[in-house]
Amino acid sequence: MKEIKPYHKSEDGKKEQIRTMFDNVSGNYDRLNRLITFGMDLKWRKNVLKILQKADPSNILDIATGTGDMAILYSKTNAKQIVGVDISTGMLDVARTKVTQRKLNDLIELKVGDAENLEFEDNSFEAVTISYGIRNFENLRKGMSEILRVLKPKGTLVVLETSVPENFILRQGFLFYNRLILPLWGKLFSKDKKAYSYLSDSSLHFPYGKELKKIFEEIGFVEVKVMPQMGGISSIYSASKN
Ligand SMILES: C[S@@+](CC[C@H](N)C(=O)[O-])C[C@H]1O[C@@H](n2cnc3c(N)ncnc32)[C@H](O)[C@@H]1O
Image (tube, rainbow, N blue to C red):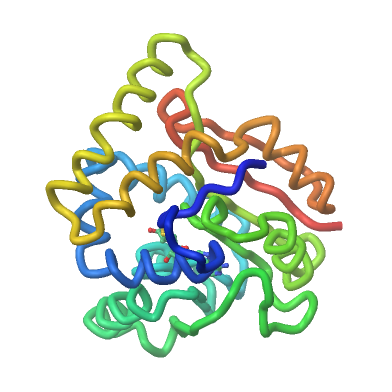
C-alpha cells in the first residue's frame, strides 16, 4: 500500500504529520466536513448508529474519535460507557467542549490514545468503531490487530471510511470532485492548505470494499460485511471476533 503523508517536505513520520494536520484543522473540521459531503455524512453516521443499536453493546470504544460526533451519537444506544481516543489533542479539545455542552461527561470519556498501541486490556469492549480514521493510521494492520485484541469475543466492529464508487458515471463524478473541488475547499476555507489535498489523495489510494474486507479477515475478524453508502462514496464495514 502506497504511504500517503500530508506534508511531503517534512521529515516527520506519518503519525506525527497526521497529528499536526488534525491539530491545525480542528477548529473548522466539523464545518468543512459538512461542506465536503454536502451533509451526507450525517446519514452514513446514523447508519453506523443503527448497527450499534441492533448489537446493543454495554460499552463502546470509538477510535480516532476526533471532534467526538460519533461518541456523542452513541449516547442514543443503551451503552453505559463510551470511550473516545485520538492522537490529536486539538481535535479532542473540540470534542470535550461538545460533550460538556451536552452534559454527557458522565457517559463519555475522551482520552489521548494511539490506535496502534491501545492502553486497554484484551477483550475490554463489546463494540469498537472507527469513522474516517483508519486511512490515517501509520500502520493499518497494526492498528486493526490492536482493535481486535481489545474487542470482546462476539463483539461488534463498525468502520465507516471513504471508498470509490464502482458505477462508471458516479466514479467519474467522484474522481472529479476529489481531485479538483476538495483541494479547492481546503484552499478557500482552511488554514492548512495541504490538509485537504491529503484527504483527497489518501481517499483515492486507500483499499476499500473487497480488498479492505480481505485485510480485516487476514487480521482475524470474522463475519465481515461491506455496505456501500450512496453508490460507494463511503462504505460501512461491520465485523465480529471469534
Ligand atoms: C478524519 S478525522 C475523523 C474524526 C471522527 N472520527 C469523525 O468521524 O469525524 C481522523 C482522526 O483520526 C485520528 N487519528 C489518526 N491516526 C490515529 C491513530 N493512530 N490513533 C488514534 N487516532 C488517530 C486523527 O487525529 C483525526 O482526529
